Image 1 (cartoon, rainbow over the protein chains, first blue to last red):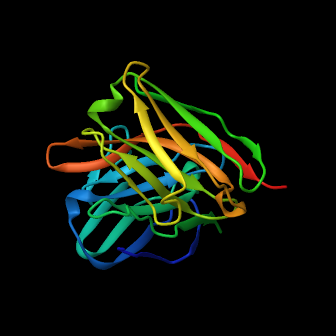
Image 2: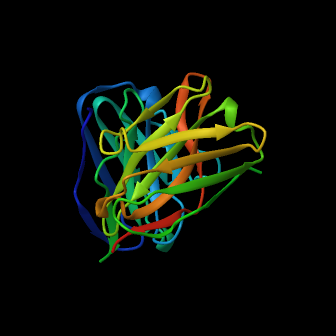
Length: 108
Length: 120
């Protein structure tokens, strides 16, 4: 099983700040099968980034993804009030399709 | 517009069975990889199962042998039969669509979820 470890567990930031979220895989992951999701309480998860660096339809350009191999990063360039949520990375390279444990971005 | 609507959740005693349904619209389920993902209270997302476009299936170790995913092409729906339920199966269960786009694979659409509570 490919284990995804996200850091930090919680990120306390203010609106307008830059947020950098990390996801490290226990073994190399193909970028074509790596994604980031945003999840708010009571809502369905929302696809942000696919293929490690491609924004999904309708996602603002303040969200960007990068990385390859075992290290991936989600950057939110300037936090808006609606961006405070939990963010998950996920790999689809090999079953089981694992998620990271999540990074909560909270208002400082 | 792609839409996924889950039903069938509820309160069930340990050892009991429940079947979740996912009604899809705006696309054809048998041309995509349909998934179930769950979130236990206070926990993160956990992938549960997938049914591939060729009809083959796969499961997380935690549910293998107890859960069965299936689909009904005529109803454009996906199901999750859950047997021998345990307290640790308590979660919101989401139905989600996985698709290939060019050389990329990702899960792009999710339902709102249905709550399963396993308790005596």
